[in-house]
Image 1 (cartoon, rainbow over the protein chains, first blue to last red):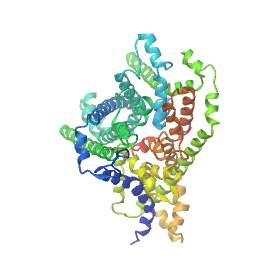
Image 2: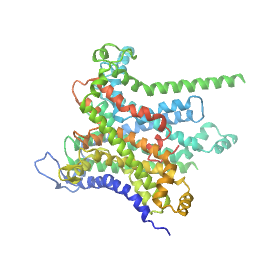
Image 3: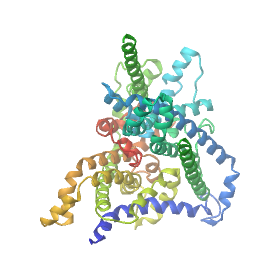
Image 4: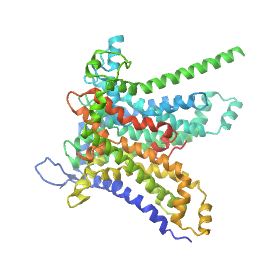
Length: 291
Length: 284
């Protein structure tokens, strides 16, 4: 028997870094969530509040509004990206001249700084010299103004997110499609199944692990979007694009409502975990029914 | 026969049209950013054209010769490079340990780090800010507004994917190689440094570049855990929007500089981006 001591020794630095900078803050947030703590309030320091912060959250319209907006955004973004990504991945399965070049350029948004993504979309949509408002006005007489119309701002953020992340969905699904065995499909075709049946009863179930991973990652990231939106609209006009990440940021940093912001963070984290869990159950149930 | 080949030709035309459109759509925001960075303020509002006819260099020269902006740039380079080195070394050690010893429960730790990805990023600003200003300090020194603070914090999102990526590569190196070297009288360290490391070097290079890019791109923590001396280029870029009467040409120039590393590294890492972004869950 070899001693494990050196193994743990090699692993320790990694575990220590993750513990101090990853887990410690997490428990700290959970702890602060039980206190009233506002740097601007006349009561100094932390006051024990029990679950009052959580009680307040349930009836806080600003929180509920931004939560609802975030869920709507995440749902629209993720479903669109999945549908588009699946279609595009299908076209990339077979090799063709130029595929590598297309793929490489198409990947570019994924490694751009999100803040630069927001900046580039701001330049594209800015009233005054942005080409999108200019051409919409010139060709259709359409009044496009991000600073004035909330719905337009929301849709623009949505389009930006789809632009930014559809390549990711395409590539993960492509990885899944490439790894699929070919024989079952061919066998089913021989047995007289049509393309839709092959897709529905063979491709989808076999792709389930990759699909789930892709959906989870996209959902988690869409629910916590901050950087790009901050750059594009700063959450405005009004609260039209104030997603939960930005809302929490505003509560914690400019308003310094530490206890309330922490409770909110924890509730959102809990919500995300529950949502992913429900989705996991729903999708595996659907997978089972097919068999 | 003829309809078949016609259909095939149409299929090809469709495929290339689709991907040409996709590439134009992908590049349009980036291209426009470069166009804006090439125009002076007057040109910007006067010429509604998508073409670059002349290049207005002051947009680049002014920020690049500004000492404040230079410091942002240098900070970004130092933080990203140190973080990438640290992550690569830690991931090398950790995955060697995980693949050569049975360390019960150790893998779970990396699974739990996914909660980081589920929580709103703003949730971590407050506890880290408090830790950096009140707990992690020695005398007059505090971790707030230092490069070392950012370097260590970025490990939290870079290490999990680095470990998953390296684990697969490390498992591919047969343990018999270690055994053979032991017979020749080498010790563990020597094996790790002179036999294993060269074999996994390509994986380390990918880990290094991806960590570097993710660290370079990070904004929210950099903006809130630094104030003056450790600010990075992404925070510099964000400062443009809060200033009234933004100089859009300069902002576009800074944003272009901020995505340059991505453009340079794109070709090398495009096949591994998916692995990096899924915490190693999806491999190509």
